[in-house]
Amino acid sequence: MSDRAQRVRRRRGAQESLAQIVLVFESVIVFLAGLVVYGLKALPAGIEPWWGIVGGAVFALLMLLTGGAVRWRWGIAVGWIMQVVLALAGFLVPAILLVALIFGGMWAYATIKGAALDRRNARLAAQEPLVNGD
Image 1 (cartoon, rainbow, N blue to C red):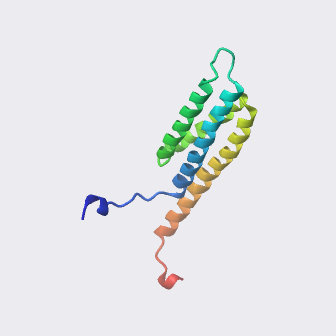
Image 2: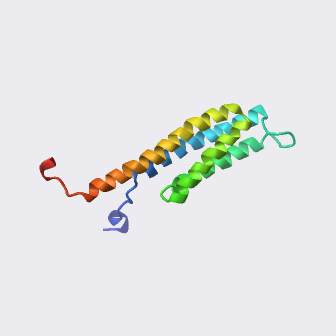
Image 3: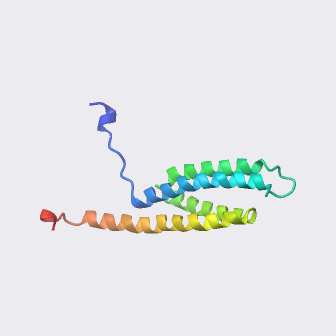
């Protein structure tokens, strides 16, 4: 058999899976928010409007990269920091604050409830197996 056929996939927990899903969808919205900042020319005077697109694209890319790092505790912390930064963007366009609140709530649920599910699953896996599905 080849190495590819023998390779076993790493088991991902609920927290990691849910956090990645939230960050991937949020990155799309963040890119679109960058387009809104550009279209509304919402950046302070002296900053070219096209920086809105660049900022949105870079922040969306950082969210995607953070999605790959949520398997570690520091990746979850970076995700929390990104939620705060997105909320601060509400000073440019107030509608972004609404998006930040919605995705911030989803992030909180994904990380807190996902960790609780992982702890529960680990506890159940450590117990003796039930006979005949009892």
